[in-house]
Length: 265
Image (cartoon, rainbow, N blue to C red; front, side, top):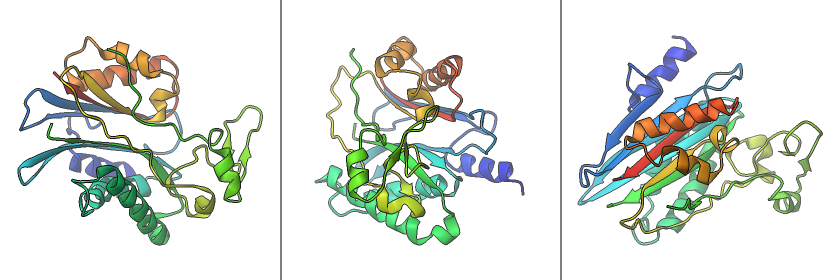
């Protein structure tokens, strides 16, 4: 079986349709006016697509959770694929998830990263960044996550014994190698990296329109407000995600582009 066929099977497992393997949609069972859609576009690099998504609603007792994530792998697809299969289960297994979700997410991130490092012989040397959103029962762009860049976290990296390179014509890199300062995996760099996530807990008010999750293939070429303006008048969630990826391509993004849009109609 070829790598492409293996990736195709993995994508089908997370709900990507066979007719359009890089696009999909779904909706809440408890609240019919909440829908989601996602779309992925491979970048112009020579390696296989290394982005993975999770976009699903899950029933737990009398509660419904919307589970959404984008895992942007580097140096291979094993780590983001592992995260796709395990991270949310690890989060939901935390005993205090329903009472203290932010702390539960942080602990689950740390435990998952430890598991990945222990399995480095099987998963390889690569790693992955992640952006996740969990919806529980349930105008101006509001940023819910923080970009973890080597330049903004250079003091923490230095305190761990690492350094940030800034060569002309290249992006800042941890130890001259990795262009992000927080990630799962990356065993050879882990002592200078962190896997602790930035977590926010927000109440979804009645006037909320949508949530956008995307990989840096989109955010490198679009601001938060530009992304909001781009899809504000599009009702369908999957069409919104596809429109954002198309706009990123039009703006000359060359990276893998993954996007999930959750609509509150």
